[in-house]
Length: 342
Image 1 (cartoon, helix red, strand yellow):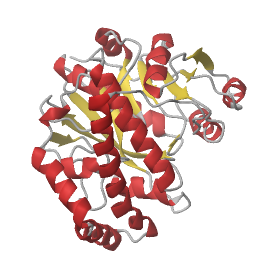
Image 2 (cartoon, rainbow, N blue to C red):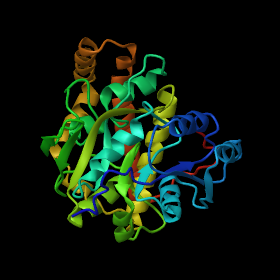
Image 3 (cartoon, rainbow, N blue to C red):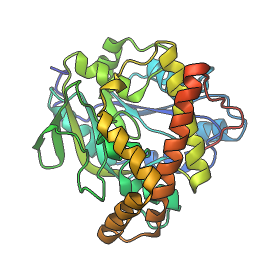
Image 4 (cartoon, one colour):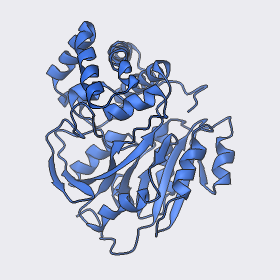
């Protein structure tokens, strides 16, 4: 059992937002939270990594609890923010997320009435024509890393496949959400951008200085908390404007993973991923034409110019991840956050 049933009363929620120079996106994020029609109490905890812009001032304007994140990274911000949380449910929201609709929090917490549900997450990334091409591309793909498409471990609805994940996962349709049963052998990349979880389960995990999304999911499932809700609602993730931003974030992802893995701080066994899928990804990137064919399939299903980013995003990912693997084997290093902004 994941926890006690909430009954008819809405649970109190602690929203944890890690920030670092997020003045451009944080106001819209907080607006979407404060406009929620929700019966329970909401506390907003902003874990700031030393912003030099107006991020902290914005957080104060909205009455947020501000926590200093001396380690600067988003993963460290989540960890120190959770330690301040008092709500029955903890919601991990990024500063570049927007909640879709005034009933978002109500719908996301509804599955917790079932005491067996450990956590919940939106089923899709909200697609908006007004967003920048990179943000639209990630929404269309249902992921921020195209490698996940080949591995199949993505966790939001993908336009090409029409599925929320490529993994074979036991699922029951409960009307407003999918009740999914997860096993440690194959996990989707759940745990961020609108992931909600019972606080008592986080306390069981004894989180240290960092909280890595899929590692948290892996440890929850290992502790026999198998059931999660994929709620039939979206969330906006303002990922960035173009390929320069994408490359910078992929480099951060690659360097950080190698650095923390070398220090024994990562727990999810990524080596279990399908080797043939990695080989297929490499071949498709080298040939390029298969990537263009995937873009065409996506365009036919949902026409948008953002599909033009698919091939270059995949090739960039192959190059950066290959370099990150070599660099990590020689001298693993954490990506510096100097000058970082959202």
